Image 1 (tube, rainbow, N blue to C red):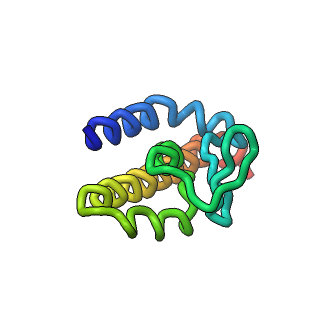
Image 2 (image 1 turned 60 degrees about the vertical axis):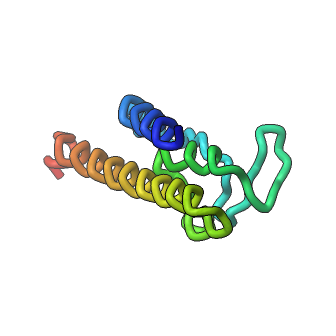
Length: 113
């Protein structure tokens, strides 16, 4: 089940990757850079859920501080899930970086300068 959810998140991130890049400032990640989880109603928590972390990872926005603690106290299945989430986050970050680089290279205004 965990893998199915993870692959679903990956599929969504692949399909909306261009939209996320185009939007720029939009973020569906409820973690701030301090690693605090901000609920939709504005409450601040010290931690969120694995699903919240996966949502961030699907957009390559999981803060490093959250990635470092993800799954630390879990059983072997939870730790494996945490590793999958961290891997997804890095893959999406790399894909975004590559897409931005390609966009800059293809932009005639940038190439003329």
